[in-house]
Length: 89
Image (cartoon, rainbow, N blue to C red; front, side):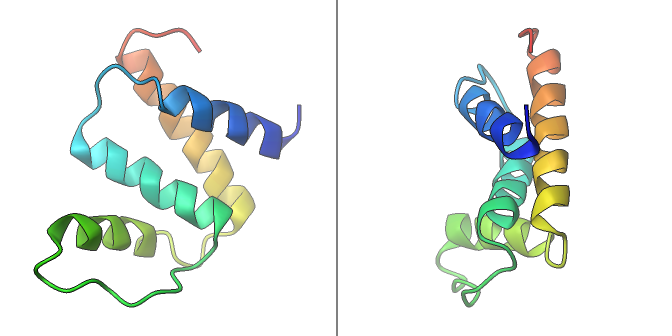
């Protein structure tokens, strides 16, 4: 299985996480965006849009990371979250 296929598999598994902290959800969001889109290509949302701003910041934190590295980090993080939740990978 290639990296892209494994990434897509774990992206589906991430949707079934029983519980996850907002912090962990933001981490995987940022990695997912970096893996699929690349560096941030929009301006930072205004102060009134806290949720969108947090997501943008999570994505921005991965700026400069290659798509392949972001995919690998995403897979690792989702595996960790699944193990913490007691779900087998």
